[in-house]
Each structure stands twice: as structure tokens, then as C-alpha cells.
Image (cartoon, rainbow, N blue to C red):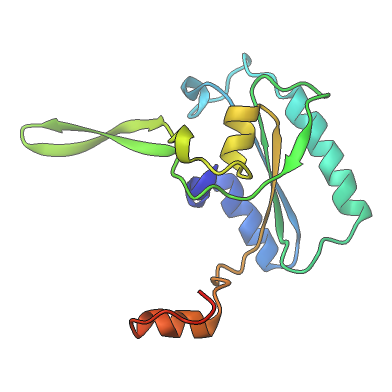
Length: 166
């Protein structure tokens, strides 16, 4: 979730498909981190399957607007088929952080942990929807990573002055 989507294989696969003109649905179910690197019969994917079917049907029945190449669907672990969903945007916060240990003066990656700053979390974000509201989050994504800043504003900033638009 949030800006950490670039490390997601699910998102990567959806982006790759979108480069061929195939709209993608990238579905993630919140699970305990102990299940992140292996499959387990303990994880129930039935609610994720329910929402996946729902949004696939909507996508097939509709034509996604220009610049919506992927729908990113995040489902809380405690969701049921009646859990509400809402449209969100990516949080600008990191939610996954590297855990580093030091041994003999050298740093080693020692896994990761999940954390975010709840006080500055954007209320319209994917992280807020899932972690705070406990609702299903649907975030439209574009493979066009170009910033939507106006060229005049960027040029003014690069030249060390404020533009009239920003």
C-alpha cells in the first residue's frame, strides 16, 4: 500500500499487462506477515475472491476512463463480503520499512516491518481506508508516472521563484 507499491510483484504484473493494453486488477489481502513468504492453508482467500469477482464483473461491463490502467484492490484481513469499499488514492507514506541489524560493524537486511504515521495519514488514502477504517480500498492507477504538475510551475520552481499557480 502507499508508495510501497513499487515493490509489489502483483502490481508489477498488472503494470506489465497494462503496457500491452490489458487493464489490470491487482488484488491484495491483508495477512499476518508470517504468511508473506510462503503459502498456508490457514489463510482464507474467500473474501478476496468475492471482491475480485465483483470488480472483474464491473471492469468487464464498463470501459475504464483514460489514464486508469489498473485497479488496485486492498482487502482488510477482517473483511466480509458485506464490508464496504471506497475509492482511494495512494498514500505518500511508506508502510514497509527495512529492518537492519549490525554485526561486526556491517549492516545486514534482517527483514522488514510495517508502520505508518497515523497522525499525518491522508484520510482519502489506501492506507487510511484499510488500516484505520477497515474498509476495502480501490485505487485507480496509471502506468504514466509523469507528474501532473503544470510546466510553468515546475519551471518557476527550478528557477528559484514561485509561479502564479503555486
